Image 1: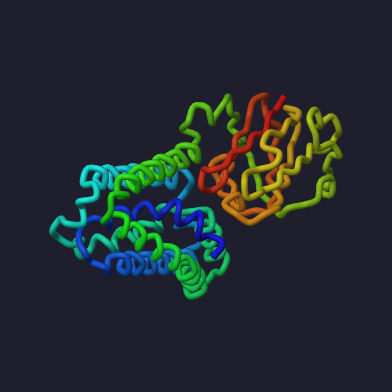
Image 2: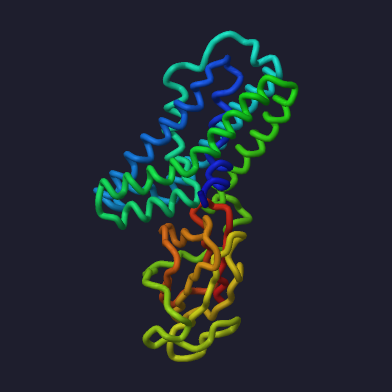
Length: 304
């Protein structure tokens, strides 16, 4: 149930495409069925083939932008029809609802990424499918309620308000995709490539072999690597900006303070499940950017 809010916000906009097309009350049920089948299949593939079938961050970013555009298109249609949509003849096409539900697996929320990591680590198609199925069943009540509310609203004068809210949701979804990929100019100031990055288990600052003792701005004058600690919270990474010396190795110890979408970080084009330690070779002057798996929250490491 932890993923209900984020997933409903990210994927729920696709439900807008099912409202205002008649009185087919089964449409939301078919939407949920399509979502269940696609997630179970994805879990089985992840358990069987591992991370080889996981979408890389740039592909997820493109899909988030595309999903946002689709939601905006649905919302514009709702605005044009207004509260008279309920009187229009015609039901939802038979395959539209399950296909839209199945498409939600391509628009992952933060908790979806966490469940995909569990499916990958299970090493079993059955266990992977079970993990993803349990997640879908846990979030199904929220989607069913959202679908019911949207259908009720589409029959009233509040349909235009729902359309405006849906446009905002579409813009937000597209914006997270742009931020995830670093396609927003303000999100990528003078970034460094961060080549040679390695990932290991989380360690306490100063306990890694050869680790330095400094962790703050200007640290890094010792013989060992600079060790900095970043906490993943529900509302972002703390501290959001960390300063470290350029030209020396750096270890970023990511720790999880609260569960949420920040539990998966995208850094240098890689998904990293937290807690973890990211080890960087000596970097030039510049800024290393990272983001959560959904592109909602961003952090920076400033090399000086």
